[in-house]
Length: 329
Image 1 (tube, rainbow, N blue to C red):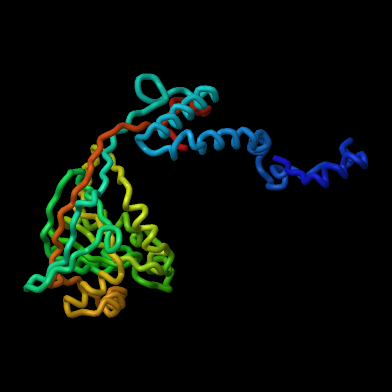
Image 2: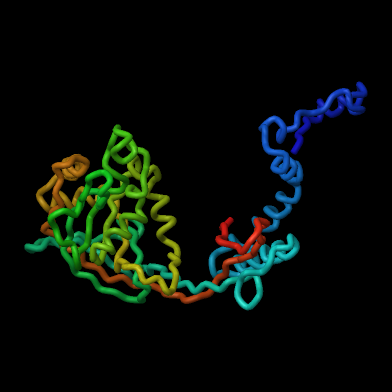
């Protein structure tokens, strides 16, 4: 693909350089690519790519949401392009579309959450969206929770780093309180010297909590540790969450985030200091502990079953003999 500024193009025409005395550098050749790869690169048409993006990004498709009208239009558009490009259909019933069943769960305003001292005292009622966000991953419309809270530090079990926040404690049927991100490190052999690993992601934390038998998990949000503000959490968790309908992996009744100041009050009511506990959680001296607090909640959700589509096309290989494997793109 060659790029010219208008000034250079005009100069070349005016001085006769267009006749062959001067030619723009060939990016494919400059990169030292194999001949066949370079030829393919020269065949890339920026305007064709731009045309596809222009349609798929149009307001007509309404964001191409999973299970929404715009998403279905996008799938059929891509299937049409597969056919025009000569790919063999590899979806359902001899076509390009592969049906996938999903369930969408949207937490409703009737949801209530409170943090209750186990030995009496007033409960801390939390405000949905302001103090916490949550989602019922079990795909049920209503669930009631009344369970003890266990602080498990970063909520990580990573054998390759010799790290286990769950050592010596049973968390089945309990709600876990844990910190976003992962233990601080400057050692490349220990959590990649602080570079985010999968253990630091919120998805891992909820998955691991469910695998351990917990019924809920509360991730403590702090902007510098999460790398995004509470407004991002609130926005993304105020919408419908989509899961595979036939997902058999363990799930949480309450997959939640709480604000830093809510966590501070929770620890204070437990006779502890949040900053001290976070600092301890980043060391090998940390031990998980059950707090003298209970998580009491009623989660009210709208549950929606729907179908969406993968688009699947096949480009047969050119190696001799039967195909031994497929490569996804």
